[in-house]
Image (tube, rainbow, N blue to C red; front, side):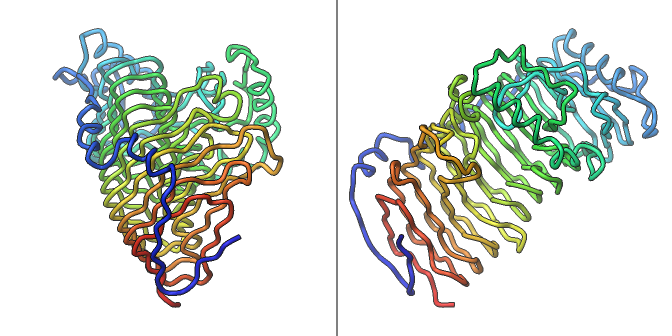
Length: 446
């Protein structure tokens, strides 16, 4: 174990990771990555939900009216399904179709039922990185293209300590049973959990192409808030997530390729942004990484982590770029976090972070933990390599860095450049890190 103490440390350790970094995209490639993320192709034309009988009284079930508007829009070749100002009650999920933009005007609220039975029949989804047939997410799309959710309105999942969130405590048996099915390779069609106590994620496009989520506000999600899965070309822009329930991660791209998250505000009950790619054997079976992801100009307040990789990352995560973000709250635990364990396998490779202002975090500014969550060891040690933090400043933290690798798979290729981590109560903790460069790194005295 090594601890970093003192005011300033300047060192250079060269290794094979320097050569690996040359093979991966860098900051000069980010404009190309962003330019390749295609926006949805959605024609002009509005389809108001009121034309199909929806009423904004907060009581009348508008689900069928919204579904009818979506179908009419889709069959006409696409356009905007417009939800005007008012409170619109949905007793069940909204399923998007190709070339449809669900647009919530300013002052509009989609208030979803919090009765799980309203979210049947089962759909093909993922729970914490394992594929399953279970309750539908409140807003869901399966194998569609050119879809969007836009506007200045609010989506409210209605979750609270008596609805959805209570299953955080009581759903352990179902979680274990699903995990065992994933490990045994039970076909997804036979993993039937429609009557279970597994919580749904709020907004989930699944196997979709060209997805836009822009401008909306998210409240009271049952579990993860925004969760594109196995999607290509995803843009999340100008979204506000204010949801403090258990596992209320703000935005979780999962096994997605080409993702831009920009100009968003996160105040959450779990990680603000968590990039994932499937869990354990089931994640390895699907084998789809999350890759080519850009996060920029976002603000993080409460949460377990600001930008996080893992812990469900068995399909691998690579080429993640984070810049120009602000992270500050006594209830924000870490700024940059990578988490996994030897049940996962997979890799976390080429994450580059720059120009991040951290006011206060309650734990470490930068944390990598490869013994996360599951106490038992497994035969699939994850590989972590080529992570660069540059121009990251922090004013207050428990410790600057908490870096714990595995003896059989030490962390490779970490670079901390021109960073200042101040106000630390404890020294950095470093275990099983084989390759670390500190360039003009400052840890001021307490």
